[in-house]
Length: 428
Picture (cartoon, one colour):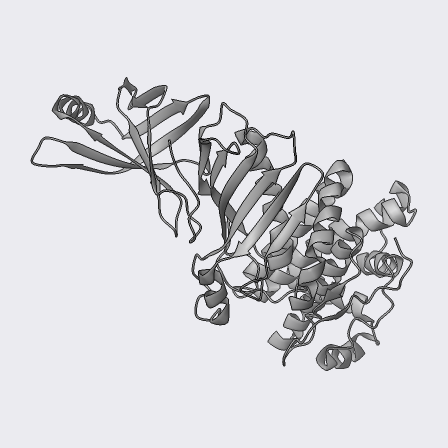
């Protein structure tokens, strides 16, 4: 197996693999697999067999075989689904497969200290030369903005549904540290969550090549973890925050040592992401999903930092009271409706309800038909933006971030250089 990261960021396009075990429709065969991939999609396999094997395959299909295959390579097994079968004049048969899951690890029996790969639909790095550096005591990671990523962000409205390789990613272990293939994929999965927090939608990392410094490649993790379309989600992350990303990552990585905090962050970021992604399809679903993130975050803040007991949290206290209390605990004392004149006017219909109560009114009446409410699309959009903004503040507070951010509640105009996060100093 051989591969290397080129200037455009992708390793060699095809590997020849001799599986330790390879079965097609339950029949054991001894042939190599050719593992390949394209810039815009995941792993593909193909086999090319001689005439004797062609005859055996024909017999399998005549018996009603479904083309399922399974291979095992150094302990890494995977089911393959046949998507096409072709024969040529030379009695050669070519079959193409897709794996049932991705990424798929090939090799991996030797530990490595270098891993190179590609980031798909990653966050904007704003400048051609603006690399992102992430660091722990075990490894360093460099994201280098690819020319294609830079150009696509300049025309992001036209590329919103595309799959774009935006950055190359290089992990280098600290001196004396090594990673197995499984360790590497777990690390990159967590890095993907971090990049998702920046982008606001799932960021893919894949087509990994693991090697030892000065040595040959030892494993390939071909394919990409789940990721969302390229569309820009316009959240808190901005050009002014770029210089603080490294410090934010250190806090994010340290949070993995706190099992409860890590679970809260993972769930909240996933709800936050889902709300961003579904917004163009349904603003109501976006509000409901964002509200779920707020419930997860406010509960943790009140229990861990606010001193609320389990009994108090389980009492039938209105959620808007809990969200108001958790927002105060993280140091937010702004009027959360200050950017929406529409919602300020609408609050008069509910006896001057403040922003927290108005959020709950909208959410509850979207979910419960018996409590229907007439609202404009603009009002629903502003409720969603306020909720997502509150979620961003809670997540960034828990990660001890006090840098710059974009206020997503501002509906139009140039976002500018960002502003200081609106949390009072001294809160932790």
